[in-house]
Image (cartoon, rainbow, N blue to C red):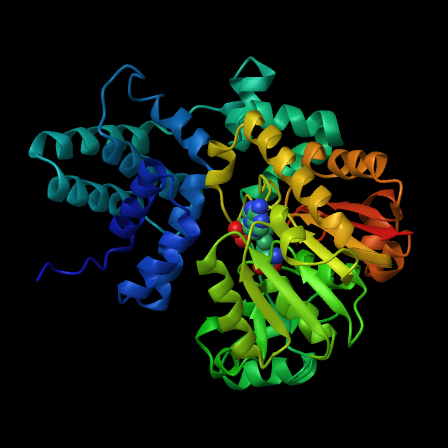
Length: 451
Ligand SMILES: C[S@@+](CC[C@H](N)C(=O)[O-])C[C@H]1O[C@@H](n2cnc3c(N)ncnc32)[C@H](O)[C@@H]1O
């Protein structure tokens, strides 16, 4: 049997190579790797930091690398990622001495390649350790400088500068390069926030009240997903911005609800909790493996009002009659620019053309489910992106084409005071949350009413 790798740097290297080669999600690979390889908590932390950190800072690391290695030099992908990993440790982690960074890299290079590659890696890294890295403020062109310094493609920075101004855009970039917080949503069917914090403390996990959503608990340290409390369904791991969506939907027990893009079911569970597990929720997703995840979550949380179906939401009118639902949520597929710190590969992979394509799908889903809302009912459209095309533009176009819908300005009242005050409100029924504002994911939430 092959010996299992337990070196966090080598595991990180494997993940980084796969993210690039297979366009795989770092989050999923990391989760899978941690499950398969027995690492102590310190090494798990280092592995996580290395994977996210290197993907986040890739452009800066590449700039530093090419101060020492000619851009034209042919290099195998794994050698490039190994060098990025080493530069990352040198520049961004202070607890790892230079000699450890070099020795670890050379050992890995020797194991994976031949003596010549190990010598090359050794030579490049030793020079870097001796001479240091170029000053980024010396880069003449402003667009190149911002792109390298904040490690984002310039088209994206430029797009955000146009939308939000330079200060906000750069604050977004800065936040995208930081670790994301871990927050939990209390399952109010089973416990309350105070009791959950105590239960977690008893399990050795330090937790505090979240600072945005009323049901949020913020984790200071410890693996919350490994606890009995999780298995017993006392909470769901969810970002605080996501928690605001169920508030936006304004549900009451006994209502009929459609969650049109529901997988893996984070918000479906929350909606059911807010309905006190009374009424009905039809939860659709394009993919059957995602509706299965919704079922699993519902069981864990003690919820039995969710009916899942693998279905393209654009076909929903084939299955449900007009005016069937008091509330419809479209938590739409999107570019994901609000969650870049959780999925850093997004900034390297998504293009302006992808945004155009996804905006079309979003509009089609909105148009398809609109007839299913009852008169007087509400439709919430949300995304985890900060791109105007997928957010305000999509909703504005929808409103132009649907005279029977209007903005529900009571959305404002359902948002926490801090979001009321500092969120970027288009009007009182549409809010854009940027990732640096409340230490939450970037999110767009709008609420429309059928009249
Ligand atoms: C942003 S995610 C939803 C997250 C979910 N609401 C939650 O809180 O866990 C969007 C989901 O829409 C699904 N999807 C994409 N296109 C769809 C379509 N045409 N019809 C239904 N679901 C779709 C994706 O598979 C994905 O699971």
